[in-house]
Image (cartoon, rainbow, N blue to C red; front, top):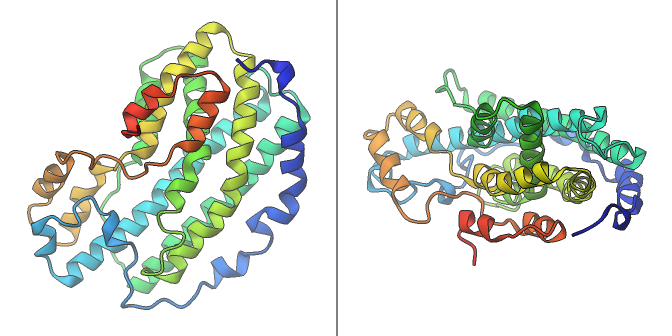
Length: 312
């Protein structure tokens, strides 16, 4: 088990010192305000990431109907990122800086976390503008109601199961650690894709540039906070970790029936239920090497997480 004396401020100090040169907010405002020209023939989202991409009823739909689904998949992708930033990460960052979690009193911790907080607000803006540009370009006049993203829904459900404030705060910390350490795997689904609108790979690519540092920040900060937890709190942290991994990785099946119906595709619920029953079709993200690294450093057994993701 890593002890407090093993944890120095040097890594956080180095990451904080690099922030003025690294942070994408410093040099990419124009890319977001005036994005590359869109091509109406290019899809908004890769069809291969739809859980029902090969379902016969989806394949039987018209090209126009399929393109509507892909546009809404892109909007939902951005909405899921915004939810992770605004309803999971940023509230937790604020708690860390306020000293809600023992062990966050060092200036190195507060500085690195506050910088990440600033970055996340910028990321929300990037994804908000991506949604706006898509709506304008596609002339969208109506949209289905998206449920809250599955990552946040599962956090809220876990928090509702306890009346203890410390337990709710700890759950938020675990969800934030998993999200920040693993979000690049979600962003990389699109960040290098050349088959979609240029803007739709650019935004995740810019976001991922910052998150590569955020993952390291959260590993260091979580180690620091874990050292100050009581045995009961550490057990709660360990129990919550695989749940947070599942919440982050899961396909968000709740949103798809409304999107399919909005596109005019028949048998929407049947399509989704058919896909939900397919073995191995429940996860959108499968790379959790960063969280496994954190688990190793905290002497936490990674097997429960591997059972969630199906990793060997």
